[in-house]
Image (cartoon, rainbow, N blue to C red):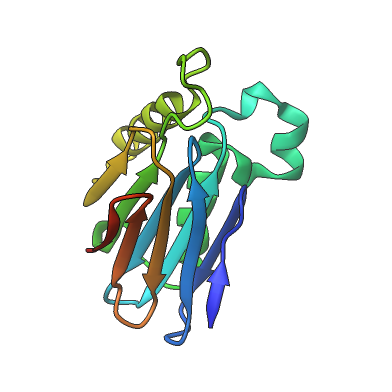
Length: 159
């Protein structure tokens, strides 16, 4: 079953029939994680780097922010038997789609936030596709761990 992870959403699954997908990653970032031993997959689509930007929204939707959403993604995967040391981690998005003058730099700030969080928690990214000015889509098959990233205008890449 195709499970869509919407903007400010997060899903984890250990059902081999599931494919997790997130679309239209512009300045937003998608984080896909997979434990090949436990066959647990997870995906987060966050919008902003820090929950301190809007603490009310952070309480109602912690997946909107990197600093609250990423830990929750990993914890949800752990509850299904995943282990951090076995995780395959892929990050995509963080582009400069709407902010052509780079006034807000949301995409870049989101990318920096992910890298800082992962560095502090000893998480190594297996693959990243961030920056630029293109939208991205990520798909992750729970059964095989196959990950596909589609970049607007550049086609599909299988990892």
